[in-house]
Length: 163
Image 1 (cartoon, rainbow, N blue to C red):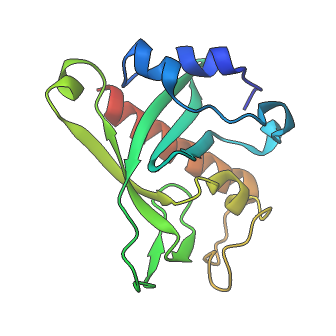
Image 2: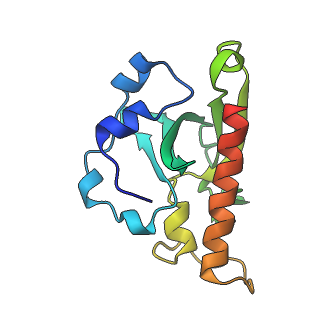
């Protein structure tokens, strides 16, 4: 993914108002991110942990979506799998729900997917972050194929939000 500025990120949101995009918390460490290792930029709002954001490239330009996550259920440590990168976690996967773009979103329609709670799918796929024993299934796919699959899953989720 190409490095992005705060202004580019704010302008990329497709499922919230310009005012909301202007007010949301953008990470302060954009210059320090390992952009070459990211298929998408994802983060949680430190002031509102149930809010998350995802930015990816689509058709050569950045597109971003607002997400809400389900609250973690206390005491529940069942293993769950991220539907984007296929990493399994004990308590580290959340249902993330995105309002649909346009009129559908204004009418309350949304799309959901199970994602790594920390939105670090790109790092798990590349082995730069470890989710613990058994987190990655044994596969015959190459790293490039796994990255391609994750990117395709993100693109499909974005397409559902913008449809």
